[in-house]
Amino acid sequence: MVEIDASTLIEISEDENEIYQIYGEYVKEKRERLSIEIQLEQLAESVLQKMDESAVADMDYSDESIDLLENIIDSAFENSEKEYVDQDLVDSISTDLGAYFGLTIIKSLGGEWRFRKDLFHSSIYFGSIDKECFPFHKLTKRLLYGKNDSLASFYDELLEIMDAL
Image (cartoon, rainbow, N blue to C red; front, side):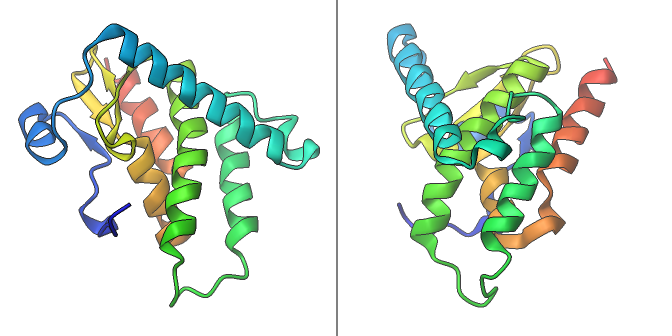
């Protein structure tokens, strides 16, 4: 993966033209979308299988599991030095935990995946509010910037937007 400037990553957008210009067209062919979706679900499940059984017990794609995901990230990175970031590790973790985070958003709030050629730029589209969110982008920013880029706050922001309907 090419090194990414996380400060330029989109978290939530309603500008479909901007998204298209930056990340390209999303996958529209039904079979291809289904295949990617199955792969993501398998990836999320394999991540859960690798974790400590006590932590995984509550990882049920619920609102509450977002806080557990935050705790897992904090535990994994508590001893890391902020000056050095292993980009390969961030890329791997962003994909693995991003799959779980994205599926949690979909199962809790609805929406549908918009997969792109580069999975990292895939988004969740909410037709009812005509917005897209980018779970892999958000997870990357959380890994790089710590608690200041909280997944829980991002999730709460999505809840507020949905509740405003």
